[in-house]
Length: 116
Length: 112
Image (cartoon, rainbow over all chains, first blue to last red; front, side, top):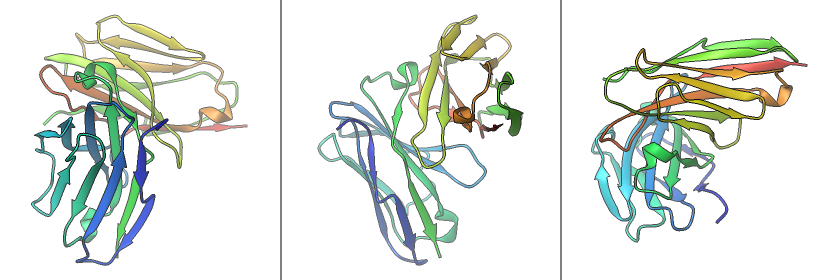
């Protein structure tokens, strides 16, 4: 596709519900990142894939958060038993190159998750 | 914990004014500094990726400078226009890491 596509754009979940957020990166992009932006904060790193390999998941805040990219393209971020503190914008970014921090990312528009 | 700080937090300027913001980051083990522009309801858009001390980059009316020894970068907008209204984010990466650490952003409002 022309850009990084995220869906849904908005999600309202009841506390305790499981949610799945999808990211469709630019075709051929090797690196894929998930970031979480809480209100009034900058985006914070969650996890990073190079192709299908999850190379860094140090930012996932708890074992309720799980991410996958099974075929090295589309990625899904799953949050189990959502809590109010999970309310945030979830940003996906991809990069053509492995050394993405040197060359920069292309971001999606994000999914705004509200847990009520 | 890496601290990336941006100032000011928010800024209102009149159309036609020039403005600048600051991004401060740790000066040790520097690898790259990114600037992004994020308009409401859109994707963050990459403006610059800067890697060398003394780098200066320009894109239209927007330019940026980098000082890795003292750990700061400036973003300048010349002759601000209403379409420049957005949140400007900087992000820093250390050598050996693919992830970047973002600041909290500077929210710019250009008043027509």
